[in-house]
Image 1 (cartoon, rainbow, N blue to C red):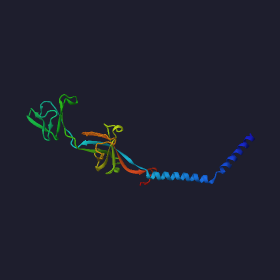
Image 2: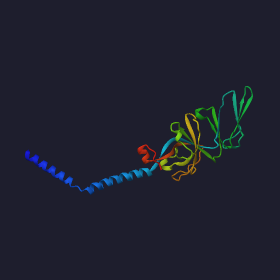
Image 3: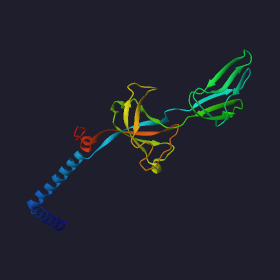
Length: 240
């Protein structure tokens, strides 16, 4: 046992001598490399930045919405249609006449838009219910965002928006791009509203043309102010 202990102590002394013989230039070079890596990291984190993102619900609607009216054929009310299915009507044209046979009072239902007539009968599993829909031409649209109250103060005019439409999977169709044009300064139904102008219309980032529809819903991401990686790491303000 004493011989093994002596041998171990001799090896330990040899190792210490080897360590002590490490040239000083290697130590200095190692320190220089470490500080160089740290400097490059700090410099890169200062120049590389990306924006925070705010989530919102998106709604795209045509400027002129369809006219929809329903009625129930129950006594003493009688209804007389003045249009037929697929007929083109003008704004102000009469769609049907409601007659109360007890008082002989008539009520005229007129269209508030110009468009093509669609007549639906026995809707909602009710054989007595009928509906007329007048579908106007689709030429223009508007885009609105519904924003949660929390963080709405970060939303500004000019910020970029990416919209993903529910009926069109983003991995196949891509998303619509736009920018904030206005923010309503008060809450409606516990949400704020913002208007968006689409940069490329209904053309997606994947080169797909989304057909204009009366009503489209989806989700949106609003690109907030960009922050550098250094600001995110330190919590300070080191943006370019």
